[in-house]
Image 1 (cartoon, rainbow, N blue to C red):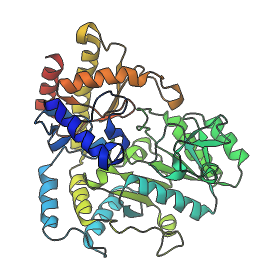
Image 2: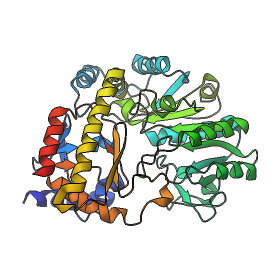
Image 3: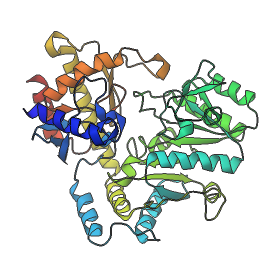
Image 4: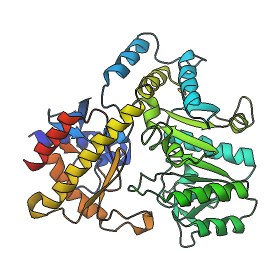
Length: 424
């Protein structure tokens, strides 16, 4: 009867919501089961509408680096919640968060807050085009940059030439200005730049691709991207919506020692509230209205609740806490790795677990670094794993291509509980 409750709610939702969900991955498409309707979260746990508890490794797809309902974030949000929900005016809360970030990340001189990672990327692309007065953008197959028209493009048959949209409703004229290359192929990047001399405004990349599997790139490739963009007067955009403030406070830019021209953030920067941000030098950022001619606006941009939640979250992301977070992650990855090999006489022994700091991904091959090399049967392998873990009270992101996230709430007690759930 409990299981039926999710199905009943899903059937009701489909009558009034497209597909019954407000974001496609929540539909459990391809998993042969109804989505689980959650009603609360605390620490490292979720509780669904039937009162079933799960150890949560989705963590709202990344924002909750401190866990659900962190007490410090909660108290700060509660205090501002009793004062205001939204202004639509200038206010001091975004200023505090902006000053905190600019002080700690040396390549950001100015930052603007928006309401989502997608909006941040949309603004970054427009800003790059306006600043360089050029139309074309290079992106990489397997890097997801939100549902902006010009970024919903996948590789066509001619990678450096034509491209094909991954969604209906995207005009061909938009896709023609997005040039698709494979990750790790710096020669193709150079050839593409030569073929479109003076037309490319920017190259955008997830420096840690983590939205189509976890596909870490060689540092040398990213360094070469930085070199070739400088040589050709092209902007380099790092999309750190996932990796920003997660792999380190300064994201992959800090870890790699590579300075992008523009960086986009989301997720953690709002402490679980809807948020996005664009950061760069004063020269580039001052192209945005009202100073410059690149227009961007938003009714709920820099919402006070999100600004306060973000600042409270970032203040807890100390060097010591990153070390603790990465320790928890390593312990969890080791436990999962052992279980995958031993469970049910090796039922999942063909799967491996890859991690980068507090992100992990379960797949058949830890060496994968390009989307074009992902196995076609990945979802078939994943759906049985997902169902097995859900039955044990362990919740992964409900898609074979999504990564898992560890938070500071996944402490030794949760890790012990994980071991017990896996082997029960």
